[in-house]
Amino acid sequence: MYHYVRDLAHSRYPEIKGLEVGLFKEQLRYIMKHYKPIRMEDLIDAIKNNKSPSDNSILLTFDDAYKDHFDFVFPVLDELGIQGSFFPPVKAIQEHQVLDVNKIHFILASFEDKKQMLDEIYSMLAKYREEYSLESDSYYEEKLRAEESRYDTREVFMIKKLLQRELPKKLRNIITDFLFNKYVTTDESAFSRELYMSLDQLKCLKRKGMYIGVHGYGHDWLNTLPQDQQKQEVRLSLEFLRQIKCETKDFVFCYPYGAYDDSLLSILKQEGCSLALTTKVGVADLDKDQPLALPRLNTNDLPKDASAEPNKWALEVNV
Image 1 (cartoon, rainbow, N blue to C red):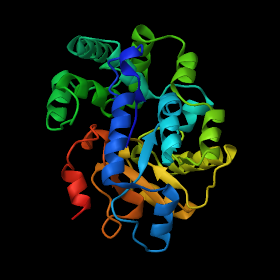
Image 2 (image 1 turned 135 degrees about the vertical axis):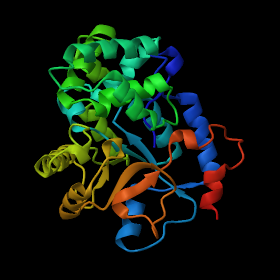
Image 3 (image 1 turned 120 degrees about the vertical axis):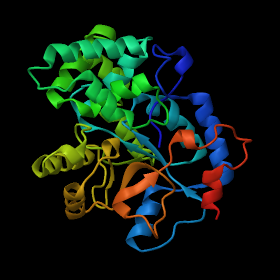
């Protein structure tokens, strides 16, 4: 599972938590030594026909359709003859809006003192506490204290959770938009066009043998939406696939934030979804894992050194 892959050192936002292009290439060399990259169509066929993929199979998946993927990832994959699977959030491509999750990333990358940023958010909570019936700051601190992040400091984890999930959605949008306009840019449309792929670029990926799957329309926590909105998310996503000339039979769904529920699973089955990808960390086992809830490894779970010895995940695959 990949997200940002970019030339961080020479970008405007070197603090973004992404993978340097050079390290991506090095990781691909490691992967080519220890795994066999397969196509998404191979996995779909294996699931439909109750077959086992070839030994040490690996899929490369890229969430959110960043323009980085077209500029830096696609040329490398194309040269090596490896298929990547790309999952675009429709709203970002069609409406030129920046996803809330990305607004938060770039706010954090623009603000060196994360404690000061958290204090600024708390000051805004004080302003809106009565209007939105908010709990005390200490309540949110205590509630989120039990949760952990593999990659973030405590302050960054708190900021992300407050703005992504914990606060009422309307207030999350108000605070995120205020901070994004203050610290990143007031021209959201221009920033979006710079950040995400265009329709033509997605069509190019499709023509060149890459796989394009479904990542929802608005990149929402789909397990928090009522069933009618979940259906709308799936329907609009499939319409988008047809727009870029992609096959919608046996489509693949990649859950935003890894979030899903029984209602969404039922909708996906009705619409003919063949498999779906979560953010749960692990090696997918078709004999044990449900096709609509397959785990994935993060790029940080594999070495970024072609000469590295196989780590625990490679060894697990070889058991």
